[in-house]
Length: 233
Image 1 (cartoon, rainbow, N blue to C red):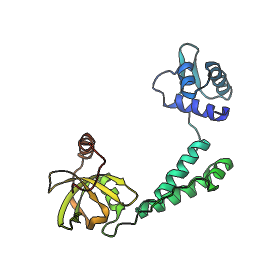
Image 2 (tube, rainbow, N blue to C red):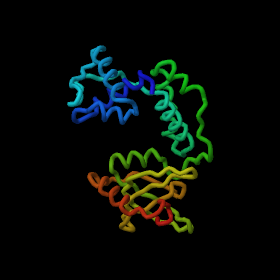
Image 3 (cartoon, rainbow, N blue to C red):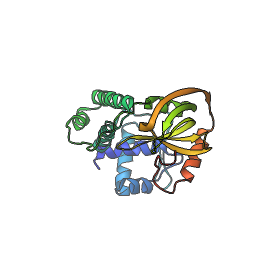
Image 4 (cartoon, rainbow, N blue to C red):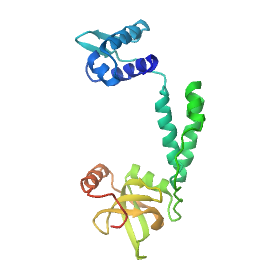
């Protein structure tokens, strides 16, 4: 790790720490020697970064110090570039547009070396691109998850059987072919998965399930025995 990146990481560690951090702990996390940490702490203090403490007792950061935004390493920038590229493979049109806006904002804000890492087109996400579902807008589902609002669905299962469902959506799972809505189904009185490409219509209900979302997600994760599918809708 280059020294500039290491200094940044030390600041991040101390900003987020809830108790004094020893040089040994930071050295292990950053995979450097304890002596290097001592030198780095001294360098930061010389730059008037408000770090207090000493050898053997650990170091803390005085409140009120913050870093400029968007200080990413090359590797972190590459992780963002690839993540945004993966969003282009989903059928969520709103998220695709948001990913392009994020790319533009980052490219305009980060230093030149990081901007070059974003724009060199060396990282690609390849494979099947999911089609946008025709019976619903995934943005509505994401908003309903955030607002803990019920949705009314007209759904057709894999056998072609149609049904009307009122659901409490709690998660979205993005696959290469489609997206699955994870929800508490009021018809089945259980957690069910609904393939978005089998939803024929979706409207926001006039009812909410506020305060229940976290509990339903815990129930869902406790039920994991296999890869979630839409077969149980």
